Amino acid sequence: MALRTATAADHERVDAAFSRAVLTERASYGLFLQAQAAAHLPVEAALAQGGVGTIIADWDARRRDALLRDDLAELGLDVPAPAGDLVLGDQSALLGALYVLEGSRLGGTLLKRSVAPDLPTRFLGGMNSTAWRDLLAILDDRLDTEAKRAAAIRAASDVFALFETSGRRHIG
Image (cartoon, rainbow, N blue to C red; front, side, top):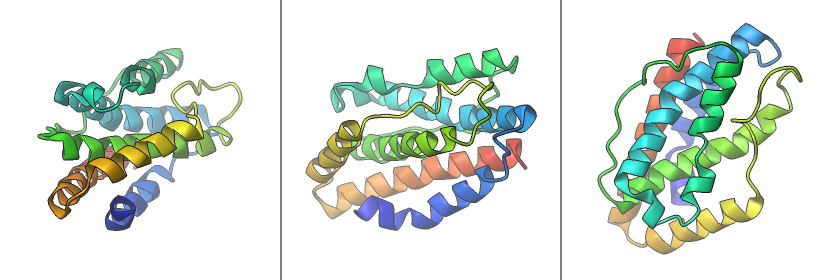
C-alpha cells in the first residue's frame, strides 16, 4: 500500500518518540496519554470539520476523543494544548489522516497489553479487523490516481509530524 510505504520513516519517528513512555508507571503513562491527546484531538477535530462522516459511515463509532478525555480525567490530568493545527482540504487528505488515526488504534490494541492493570485504557481499546479492512478498501477505491495518493500521503505525513512533535514535547 502506497500510504504505508511512503510514510514508513514518519511512522518510525513517532514510534521512537512514544516508545520512551513506560506504560506500567502511572506518571509516564499519563504523559503518554497527554502526548496522544495533544495530537489526536486536533486531528479528530480536523477530520470532523472536513466532513469525514460523509466518507466513513461509522465515523461516530470510530471517534476516540471522549475515551481519551475520560482516561485523562481518571488520572487527574488536564487535556493539553494542541500540538499544532491541521487543515484537511479534500477527501484524499481526510483519508490520509484517517489512515494514521485508525492505524494508531491498531497499535493501541497491542500497547494496551503493556499498561498496568490499574490504569485506564479506554482510549487504547481495539477495533475489529473488519473496520480496518473496510478502511483499506475505501482507501484503495478512493485514492485511485497519483494526485489523490500524493495528497493522502502529504496529509498522513502531516499527522505523523503532529504526533512526533507531541511525543517529543510531552514524553521527552
